[in-house]
Every structure is written in structure tokens, then in C-alpha cells.
Image (tube, rainbow, N blue to C red):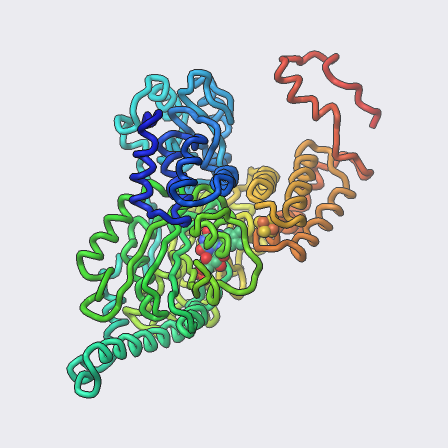
Length: 624
Ligand SMILES: Cc1cc2nc3c(=O)[nH]c(=O)nc-3n(C[C@H](O)[C@H](O)[C@H](O)COP(=O)(O)O)c2cc1C
Ligand code: SF4
């Protein structure tokens, strides 16, 4: 941790303002820089920054309380965030967590008295293929086991700087197990962009016969953009971030906007537990992602692109900046790209720990330096997005596909996959399979084929598309992965025959309870009520009346919640009730109603704190 007492803080903030800009949009980036340096955001920093950015201090405090990686309370010199996805738990992360806390002499969620270390749980950090994993001072440490946890505790106790830790601890593998036509090897940087510009047709000399040189260049640019849009339409490319909206329609809406400024935003928030494809694309196919954004900039007439990357991937910051620099040096970004009239550049923006910021309107607010709370559905971002200007928001994989489509043509892409789901798709395999990692298949591949390839023939169930997706059982394994059957971001968490699926149900319910942004009542209250019912069943005291309530609340949330988070937060509950009813039934105590509040159970924490294990410490149980 950097020592920034007294006079050093203003200098540090000034440097951050210089780097990110003296505008409200920089607020979150600067606060996160302070957090990474000081491991909390002191009041002094809030006051100084508020003055510098001409913002009310309360607005900055609102950011600190909203984003889970920002903290007003001092954290330890080492801050450990343990990934708590169900796939981590399936590899004993909870035991490792207990061992780590014991060796460090710290309680979960607290900071050690000497200020050396804090240990927290966080939701999935995007390393499900190599978990259990943790962030230590925002750097991922993968493949935790007893030895690594012991070594980690030793290094922290000895106050060893992270730079001196074994580099192996921070190794992040891409684990590409199967690739197909798109991601077999990275496309030549510039290929998609050059093709897009070349579609401008006639050589400049020919245009210049009829038009002034600047008009000719602009005309050529316009024509190229229009032709590339036709290729995107021809490809039938649908968004890879979940909803599957046609990219061509989105791009055209922004292209046709009458207002001046337009923006291109790449959604690299990748918060859906179990998903890590964007991490791999940003690592190994970075040029393709930036190229897709630039091609989009050409088509829609934007001059600026922003990539919003989750804070968990902060370790990619230097790599992303290096690729951007290289592209600028090669004329693939900046002014007059490849000698054309196209000006376009890309800025990297990091999140600060909020799943809801993957939702596009919440993400736009976050980029604007606000709390990531979804706004009302209309107007759509294509009409009023970032800074109220027309904005394209697409997923990382969508942009990578767009780069390939521009280079190889829409018809080529449309010839792969199924009629309604063209192209290939990346799938993130984790959980009970022999070969976890990334798999690329043409759209329409069956669940069985993927399970065979990853070594999971005995699976009892798979969560497709993350906690907000679909839970499938064996009778669904011949179903296909595509928009017309099983859609989703490409996440597949595999549960083997011996797993208790209720652990996954509990993990997902607590995840949604934690991640609800709290704006609307059906979701804010509903996720908490559902989590309480799940906990009640976990204790083995559920009843049919409770199941009725779970169904009722789920239906209310699906119909009444403001955004996709609340609308899909109970999918796993409904799916499990339908496909794995025994998992719930085995946790019913009686066919009668049992109150959700159990006083004796509620006193459990007090008993454990005081070390009372004697029978007198329990309330008498009513006769069953
Ligand atoms: C709660 C929630 C979280 C989301 N998270 C992501 C995400 O991490 N990445 C993403 O691309 N889209 C995410 N989306 C979908 C985006 O709102 C948006 O539809 C998508 O980025 C559009 O890109 P696409 O058309 O290329 O799929 C999320 C939606 C919701 C409701
Ligand atoms: S549904 Fe949930 S996450 Fe979405 S706006 Fe409402 S409270 Fe926020």
C-alpha cells in the first residue's frame, strides 16, 4: 500500500485527474485509483476530489457506498477477495477460506487488528476454469489449494511485497480447449478495418475528378460504412451478451441518428458467474475486439469508443493499453485511420464491482461516473446513451465477430450455425468436468456433444447461461445451444451425479440478493424473501406453503421487476422446482406451514460467538 499521508494525497489526486480528466466521468476511475493505492477512500480524498471535479461530496460518497470494491473504512495492507462462485465452492473454497482466515488470524469480512490484512468474499471473479481463485490487492491468484493458501498466508504475514511473490501464483491460463473458424488464430490486425474502408469503392483519384478532395474522402468513408453495415445485416449477427439482439439493427439506428456525437461501447463487464470468455478474448484476441469497435465506429460515424472492463480484470490494464498504443502506431486508431478520413479512438474504463453494471443502461451511468442504477427502458441507448448521445453497446464477443465479418463477409458468417443463430459461439465450461475451459462451436451444437468433449458424461445437470439462465437436466441434454433453443452468454456450469444441487440454488439466491441494486421493490424485497425461503429449506424446515410463496414471488418478479436482473433472478428456482423437485422435497419438514423465523436458529450466531454448545443454550423445541 502506498503511503499517502497529508501532503502526498493532493499530488496523487492531481496525477489521477491528469490521467483520467477533470470531468465527472472520471470520478469512479479516480476513486478506484485511490482505493487501489490506499485500500480505502478517506474523507480527505472525497473532499479534495469533489472540489477538483466540481461535484458535491455526497455524490462521491454515493459511489463509495454503491460499488463493492470501494470502501470508506480502512482495509488491510493486503486485501484478499475470495471468489465465491458455486464452482469455487465445489472445489472446497469454503474450507480454504477457513484455513486462510485461521492462518492469518482474521475473521471473514474484517481487518486484522494490526491493519495487515482483510479477507472478504466476492462473487465470481471470472476464473471458474482455474479456481478456486482470489484477488489479492486486485490481482488474481488462481488454483488455490492447501499449499498455496499456506504459502499465501506466510507471504502476507512476512509482509512480502506482491512483486516478490512467485509469478506462478498469478498465472492466468486461457484454456482454449476447442476452437473453430473464428478463434482458431487471431485475425491479422487491420484486416477487418481495411476491408471496411475499401468498401468505399472507387479510388480517391476517381472521386476527386467530380468532388473536392475532402468531400471525396468523406463520401468514400460514408459509402464504405454503408456497405459494411450491409455485411453485418447479411451475417445475421446477434449479440453475444445474452439478449441476442441483431447487431445490424442497433448499428443502423445509431448511424441514422441526427445528433452530432455518437459512441461505441464495448461491454466487458462479464459479471455473470461462471463466464470467462471475454477475459480470454481480451487476452488473446484483443486486436479483434478493438477492430470490431473501430469498424462499428466507421459504420455509425462515431469518433470515440469506450471499453468498460470489470475491475476483476484490472490485471489486463497494461496489456490493453499496450495493444491500443500499437494500433495507434500502426495507423489503426487515432486520426486518419489507414490514410482515410476516419478518426476513431478507444478509451479503457474500469468498473468497481457491481454485477448490475453489465446491464447496458447501468453501465452507461457507471461510465458517466454515477451509481450503476438502470434507468427506464426508453429512450434506448441507440437514441440516448452515453452523455445522452446515440450509443451502440455490444458485448466483447459480438465486436470480435464483427471484425471477422468485415474481413470475410456476411455471407461467410451466415453460412455457419443455424438459420436464426448464425456463426460460432464461445462456451465457458466449468464445474464437474475433466477439461474446464473455453470451447468454440458453430451455433446449434448439442449439450451432449459439449459434455462429451469436456469430459462430463455423467453430469446430472447443467446451469446454462449463468445463474440468470436455464438449469437443464439429463432429459434436456439433446437440446441445442442457440437462440431458438437454449440461449445465453455461453456459460455452462456442470454438476456431477454426487452434487447436492441445493448448494447451487443457495449460492445463486444469495448472489441475486447481494447484487440487486435496490431501485425497485419487486426485486429489492423479492430477492431477499427468496433468499430467506432458500435458507429455510437449507435448514430442512421447508413446507409446501413455502413452495407456493416461492412460486408466487418469482412470478411477481418476472412480471414486475424493472430490469433483467430482477426478471431473471428466480429462473434457477423455477427450473430446479420443475426439473429437480426432490432437491426441494427432501428439505421439507412437514406438509404444514412452518414460520420462516426460527428463534432458536436465529440465536445460533450468539451461541457460536460465546462458545455455548451445551443443551441449555438451546430453546426447547415444540413437539413435532
Ligand atoms: C443484470 C444484467 C447483467 C448483464 N451483464 C452483461 C455483461 O456482463 N456483458 C454483456 O455483454 N451484456 C450484459 N448484459 C446485457 C446488456 O444489457 C446488453 O444487452 C449487451 O451488452 C448488449 O450487447 P450484445 O447485443 O452484443 O449482446 C446484462 C444484462 C443484465 C440485465
Ligand atoms: S430489477 Fe433489481 S437490479 Fe433491476 S432495477 Fe430493479 S432492483 Fe435494480
